[in-house]
Length: 339
Image (cartoon, rainbow, N blue to C red; front, side, top):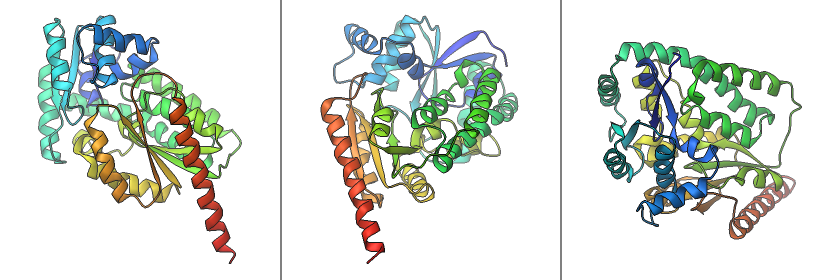
């Protein structure tokens, strides 16, 4: 699985196929945020003609792919961003070899199996080889599943650590074996930490926040984030017997209903008091906040972000007010217990 040919990806997709083809997938979202200069990357994309009203993640992906010299990029045109197809057209016009992949509209095992087979054909490998890679990657995902359990059950993994490790599984940091070793060392060290218990237990749902200090700010308020919805999905912790089953279980690509079902289950299992639903400015998924609010039995704070960087004063105030309300709810429930 050692590969020296990079291929950019715009979101989670069957990376097992790319590894099997001798390619090294690199998640352009992670690279955009992780390499520094995220705001500058957004401005560069706007200078290239991207409208101000385009999602900052799309602009960041474009600028990063060009700045880092990616010759080939897989663009997910179905089941992710409504602007992805246009992004692919611009990259192709710039001379980038664009490979497209689309999740089917419905969660259908046979349909996703066909798309995986088509992707394998495009990059010159077979589904059988990709299935073998899936088996090898399962070791790293099992460690991430334990890391996630240590977050919400034991309180020994912070929200930031949980987020960073799970989000890296979009591309396994570009090196699957090295990633497995690194996460294994982290989990072993985390097991030895003293257990922590927070009064307010939060979930964070929605696309990964573009603000870089959300988790630290919430923990500073005395709240523990015990559920990172989409990083957990991106890490494919739902598992499955094979690729088709695993990517059918993956909720993000199939509309909001599978996501709601998953969130409801985890709210009960992790004993979550309130949910922060992060929505990205100019993203169509913000409309789905309506349905999420209707379905969840706990308080929901919708937090919109736009540009990379720290939380604004207004965002901080809204989060402070939300956590204080949850504290009051906990006090009220405790008072009722003793009446």
